[in-house]
Figure 1 (cartoon, rainbow, N blue to C red):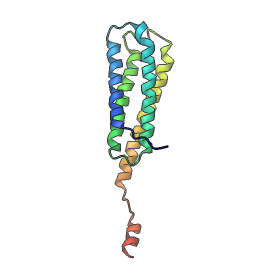
Figure 2 (figure 1 turned 120 degrees about the horizontal axis):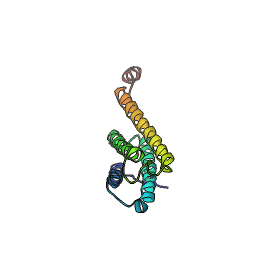
Figure 3 (figure 1 turned 90 degrees about the vertical axis):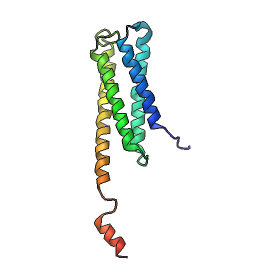
Figure 4 (figure 1 turned 90 degrees about the horizontal axis):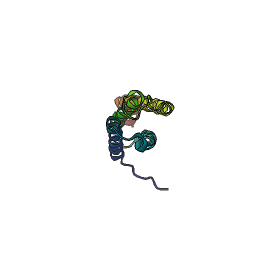
Length: 147
């Protein structure tokens, strides 16, 4: 099976739009009966999509703008976490206060988002550390030049 090209930047952009749409939904006076289940499905979709993108980025060491995409993904995670927190503690129509049955799902999504944020931060830190190390060590360089 051929490796499929994934445009990380465009996927992150669309996920950001979806998160902003949910944040707008939480501010507006919408009919919860129409939007509750769809919003929960969207939150699950966003969470699983963020998992997928993070996994793909971590596996793809040769991606040219990899570090930039990690930063973009981290910003998206912050936005997602904020939207989830608004549902968890907010005052809109779709909140854990209004619907206590949401509490478990929102807590799981918050925990997963926090875990991904930590993984991204660790990966960015590792990448910076690796880029500071010489590609060829002193002994290797000396051996290559002495031939």
